[in-house]
Amino acid sequence: MVGIPSRHQALQGGLTPMTRREANTALLSAAAGLLTLPLALPALAAAQSGKHTPVRTLMREPLAPMPNAEASVIILTLAPGEHGHPHEHTGPVFAYILKGSIENQVDPGQPKTYRAGDYFYEPPMHVHRMMRNLSATEPAEVLVFQVGEKGKPFTIPAK
Image (cartoon, rainbow, N blue to C red; front, side, top):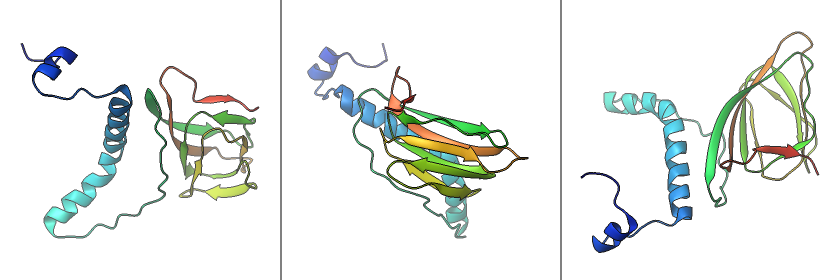
């Protein structure tokens, strides 16, 4: 029978079983790789054809080990003039403005304006004071990649 070996079979066969933390880290790395694969494919195709496709790193932040990690990618649509309420995220948040202009504030920073093509990082457990759509007529869209503990909320009320 072909399948995943049990812990006993792995030890008998000389394989070293992974700890839960190692498995979660491997899964998170694999998920991040799968999410970025569509961005890398044009560059790989260009490299094979001898052409150079520019690649631009938007941001890079270290990730602390998190047990039972789970990633979520969402598009947040803010209606004209809409604003969020203070909250915290249990894990890191990476955001990219797809459409419109927003004002955003994460403690301890000051409010900042972001436009389409801009991006920001929110560290875990920092109060996200506000995010508001600066337009009175057009929606704003934010692509959000967030990491949290599986089965637990990504967002909690501010303390």
